[in-house]
Length: 85
Length: 309
Image (cartoon, rainbow over all chains, first blue to last red; front, side, top):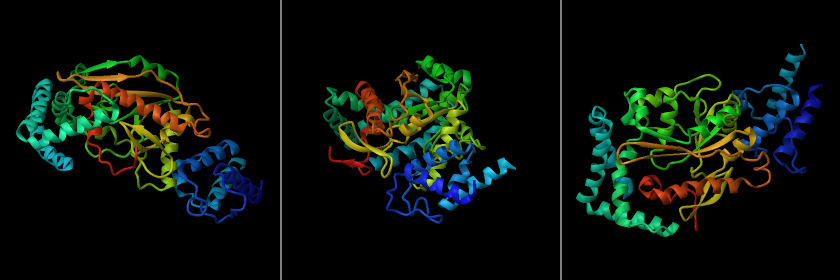
């Protein structure tokens, strides 16, 4: 899976979990908390959903450092690539 | 006014605690009781404060208490309650164990045997810190999902100094946490539960902002955290309410109530407020039965999260 498809999937998943209306654009540089208004429990759901969907473990400390959609995509991509290598 | 007395109590305790720790436990508890009662005798204003607080609580929950009698009993608990678990510092496990009367331990052990972790649903009733103290002494794998307590015994403070992925240090939360930090803490608590540990969460914490529910408690409508409901739904861990009160003879009566589970869809289907209320009802029942153990609640400041009842 390339990074663009991964990003599209993750954006869909963020939108669904955080119930973000379709008229609000989510871009790579959208900040999860400040721009999308995602709260702690939605963030937890996003992490758990991502872990289950891609079969990766997300470190709790990393969650605190995931500020934007791009951070999430980069993290997942890196771990998927590492698993594939 | 009560805040001023809290400062006085603190100064008095700081002076007498080092001495009390060297006395037999029952004698220390008796002295602390006498100190609280003496305050009421010497300071009529304080007696009026207690009676007003008890009368107000009785009115709010419709309890038929003898206000004077409950006020006196409550005053005997004041210093004891403020002493938290300091009296047990430096005492051996076997000795401390004798001062506890444990009811319902089978509920705790059965919940542990389920292997999905246990959420110890705590509160601020009675000698609430002593439940954790006992569990640490008994070797249970306990973590707190709460703000870091400021005043605990050296024994407990040492137990909190655990690091690593499931360590206590990184499981403490703060009202000033960012959503990302809070999410990390929730995930850590969830991981601790998955590892079969016990996670202590207080269900009577007044909170504001996201993940709160309005609930009625002691006749007031207040905003409480409901994060524990989400944690329970997410983890499938058993919920085990616990209460601890200090009897006049120095015995800590520690009671584990039967466990229950929160359905996984509770947060999504809007049932979380019901679970919050259910947990608070259990505390209110204890307050009704043992009003003298309610020092924390009867003098709650009103500034956090209260709405017109």
